[in-house]
Image (tube, rainbow, N blue to C red; front, side, top):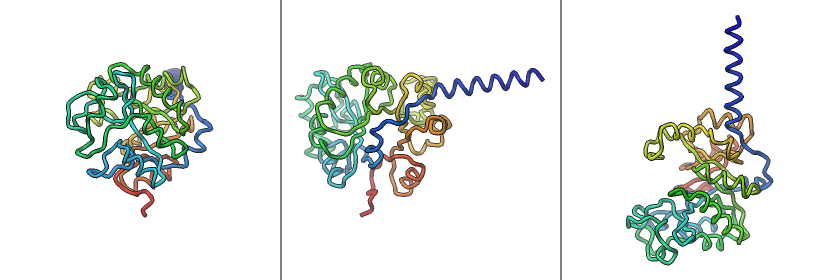
Length: 278
């Protein structure tokens, strides 16, 4: 009989440790506004006419009264570029890393065969002052997570915008927790072991830890932004049950998935369709 009690005790302790590892913060007052919107993924783009993360895509989102999710990289001159990939090969046809460019050099390139330039963060923030909210994703490269987070927050402070910040890299969220705890911060994740191309440079152990949100105890996020197709994840469910954390789903590509996410109380980051159906 004693060994049954021992096993039960071990299970209880493991459950407690698991719950502590997934620690989240709840009740941030900014959710009163952030929850009111749907968010266009990399702007409300319409390829090939309107590229992702372009000023045209951001203006189109504003015209339709959508919030926007966008990506931010730190360049070598300390300026911030709004673009998803570090390499410009996919988006601008040139195999150069945005981290190796200055703002002046960045303006030489055009997005996806159009006349659209790669925006700077301040250009986008000027557009969104007093408008719909932003989900700002920090794209840390080459170990620049602290510098990127500090530069992004300093720029955001200069504008009257409503926003939250997310990142796949927990170290960005650690910086926010330590230095700017009042900002709404979120952990981006997915089932990395299911999507081999994502995080291919990471060890299997790291991908397991990130997939299961086991760094939450260090970052204490306000929300979990999880890939919609991977949402049936025990750690995400555990975070919602015990910490009542806000979930955001990406990337929603049709109305049925959007309605399923919203029925569950989740916010949506969408693309390739009109959520308003007008």
